Amino acid sequence: MRCRYAGAVALAAAIFAIDTFTMLSSAVAVLYVLVLILIGDTASERAIRATAVGCIVLDFVSFFYGHGEYISLDAGLRLLFSLAAISATAFIVLKRYADQQTVASQAELLDVTSDAIFLTDTADRVIYWNHGAEILYGWSFAEAYGQESHALLASHYPQSRGAVRAALAREGSWEGEITQITRDGRTIHVFSRLRRRSEPGRYQGTTLETNTDITQRKADIEALSQSEQRFRTIFETLAVAIWEHDLRPVKAELDALRAQGVDDLALHFAQHPDILRRIRASVRVTDVNSTGLRLMGVTSKEEFFTHLDGFLTDPDEDFVSFLLALDSGAPHYQGEAGIRTHQGEPLRVLVAFNFPPPELLDRVQASVLNITERIRVQEALQRTRSQLDHALRAATIGEVSASIAHEINQPLAAISAYAAAAGRWMDRDPPNLAEVRASLDAAGEAARHASQVVRRVRSFMTKLEPERTRLDVDALVEEAMRLVQHEIAANGVALTPALEADGLAVEGDRIMLQQVLINLITNAIQAMHAQPAGERRIAVRTWRIGGKVGIEVRDSGPGFAAEAAQKAFEPFFTTKAGGMGLGLAMCRTIVNAHDGEIRIDPPDGTWGGQISITLPGAGRTLLQG
Image (tube, rainbow, N blue to C red; front, top):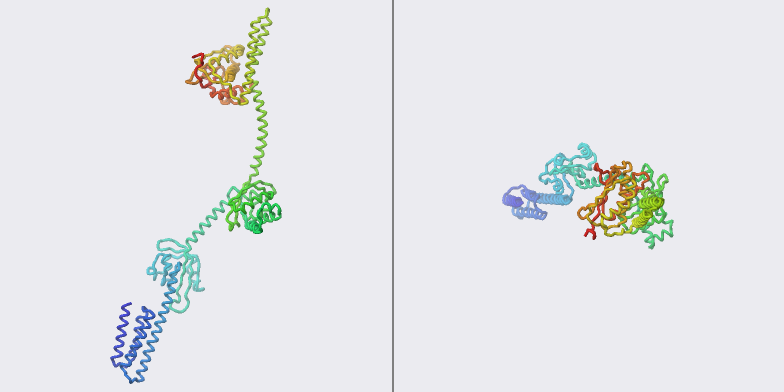
């Protein structure tokens, strides 16, 4: 710029010198226009005006210096011609400066916008490239200038380039979505607007291209579309029926009632049922999934009910509770409702709403679960429970009766045997009164034992605690064997005791534990009915196991089958004809009540049935020290 200014000054000085100090008759002053042209591209408006005035002043100085007071017509015309040339040139340069300023202002505006804007000539070469284009594509103006835009950006149009050019030639414009590639290799989507300049002038035939980056917008739209598709897939395939409602009319009705001063909506609806019916009829069903269609017995959405009032059969109070939840601003609502299918079948359903903000009430989904069968099952279960309670009461009475009958069977049999023996002793001649008395005493003891058994069974059935005392284990077993001595002798059984508890005692109920042993020995006798008389053997053994005591009853019978061994302690399970199946069950209950264990051991080749009992010890008895 400084060089131009220096050159302009030198040129003006040279023209002034030639025009002033030479005798040339031509209009040398016309050359001052070169000074204006030289500074026109770089100088400001003020500098251009000052230069023009300076040139005119220099022209006047030279003219009056060379001609003095005598001015010829030719000289005057040359002066006027040079002044006109300088003025015209100054005007043109100022006009050009103003145009450049306008273009510069427009260029600044183009650089402010975030859109990519560039200008291409008739050969598609870039001649203008704004700041937005530099940011979007990554190439600077200097790098893009002169490049073919299509090749630089790899622009891909939805139609052929020939079709786009034809549209530009025919209509002067084209717009649409295209893809381009940036400097770093990214593919971007832009909305492109092309304008062909057809006005005569410097830019005739050029194309102005404005591109708006829509890559993120398209990605957002695609993500939204995929989300909508996922939601639609879930909506249609969910195993729960879903209905979509437009609740805007309902909300408008509720807001109107509040605006009218209605404070108690429930009371207002009770007093004006017509308003409630109108609100029900205003609820429009806008969508339904496949499960909902099947639930209501329809095959297509077009056949589905258009309004809630078409299938809702519940009394008004259920719908009122829904309205109160919506009016209160509650985020959720859940309740039962009665509906009617397309075929008229009544159903009971569980309905759950998630209320959106008021501006989104046009699409409110309700999850609907059919609970009709569940309610039927619950009602049937309740009936069954009532029947079962009745049956259990009857069974309990029967079980108590059966238990008592089972437990006193042995004492009654002993009483009968002792009474018969007393009769036989009386029939002798002379009668043996001593034996008669002994038999009657034994019968009396058996009767007392039966009474105690009944009392203990009743206490046990009513969950009373057993009467615990300190018992010598060996003495307890001896007493039990004595009570079944008649059965042992009558069935030809050899009973072998091996009492080795060594005075160890247990805490327990004597009658109950004694009855356990009597049951086990009696079962062993009955298990050997098929054995020859000389091979019927029972062994009863006691022993110490650390701080515990063991009691074992073994017989020479066939033993327990595998299935019978697993079920032997279950109530009412028996393998004997006419048996009640309560003996071993009662034994296990009594042993468990004494914190003990009872189990069936498998046959070992010598003995068949083997049942072992383990009870916690309570130290040694006083008699044993």
